[in-house]
Image 1 (cartoon, rainbow, N blue to C red):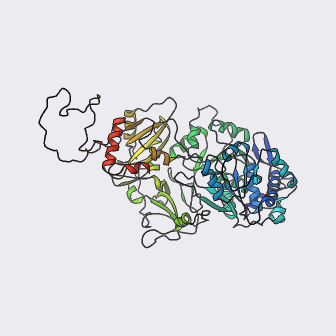
Image 2 (image 1 turned 135 degrees about the vertical axis):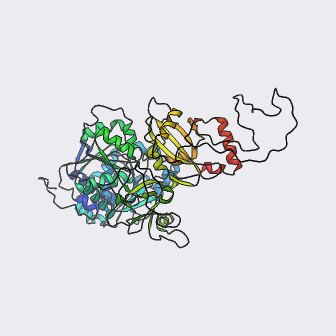
Image 3 (image 1 turned 180 degrees about the vertical axis):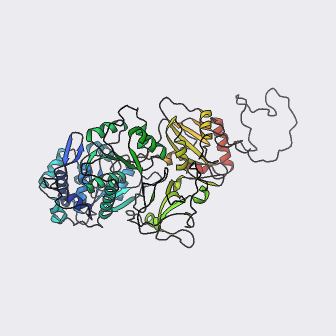
Length: 626
């Protein structure tokens, strides 16, 4: 950008991230803010060029051009993203919440030849068997780092992108990102993203949100995750906007930061919106420059609450981290829906076992899904997708495009692993992850739909719904409620709340309710459902339940109804005369369970023991540890 603010080379049609970085050279407007530090676009481009030149010197001959970045959201993070783009290298975002062998595995699995970190994270690396030697671990807040970088400070983006100093010239196919899935149920997979895909995503979002050159994108979600980079940094880069960085998300610092930096746009994932809503309301909650928020998993109820309180509309989008499918919100998208397929996409909701397309969903006037059993299935992309695979994981890559059933129906499609339904108007509705499906009394349910209903329960500031195995067959619904400060769980009030919800299906009410101070979350603020499922009702927090009929099957003592620990009316009990032994009673199944949600009482140690015995009797105890 020249001094007068005009572009020295257009970036709107840039085919690579490197071209977008090159376009910053000569632009002396503010490009990044972090605390009191302000960098211009020109300074960012120059800093990226210097780091790219250093990268070219440090990369061993024949090594993968991969660098691990183990940093908070500090200016060095976007500088190294831009440096990697110029050098045709790839950044592996390293999650600082990982520990020990798991952290070492992430660095090793992505073949990192360099590791960029800071002193705060050095204790995480102590004693680990790392594939990176000490001389290629760069500590950005160590004086030695500045000395190492100094000889390259005069480098320019054009020189680097042209391939000087042995650096490869980037192309749209050049690998740009290796970013891990959340990995809540096993070793995380490193999804691949090329320069062409990241540049296209940035251009698309910049166009969709009308990003202006005077906008400021607030990056408060962790940059080791795709959300902050793809939905926050890339559209700012493509649109010529600035970024403001927050080392780590803070709900209490959100509005002060937005005002300080003049932020106009932010991204979110998981429970970030709920955390913001949990902050104390203030008369000046609408005194800020924010225009838009973009993310996933806020839920319709909390999105409406956010708009009402802060005056900012949240746009819930859907795009698989791997780039395999995308749904765009249109102006006519109804409440609760995500939107329609992106232009040219061929998305469908299919049976995950057979690949057959499912019927359209029917909703009643209250928005209640009438045919969820028939309409909820897996979202697939039957057309061309931008999925580029997982690094060193051919099995996981193949699973995304492998067909289903004996005839391998859907071979070549992209299978998202996410549950959706599509209404009669063609709008797609998110219904949960594939492992969030519940089967209660032979009816398939989606956890996300139940969560959206329970989110209306005023005493709760956050809700998570998940399956626990039924002791006989299928699942039971369990809900974890994070109660607002000062709130207590009122079982009768909760029953009344459930009865008043017009879209709560007959199988949707929770059998178990766990009250917690806060929901467990992953490093990206997504609810840690695997931890909730594994704990189930065997958790240390208070649990309430609608009893499962007689939890003690025939042949066991009846439950204690006296409160003394003795069984009631048992032959031979103290104080009763001896009677002749009665004939053996026929084995009968447990009494039928009362409908979930009809009443709740505390889940006691005796309840737990009797229920676990029932699981053992039906050989289903092992399912509690899944």
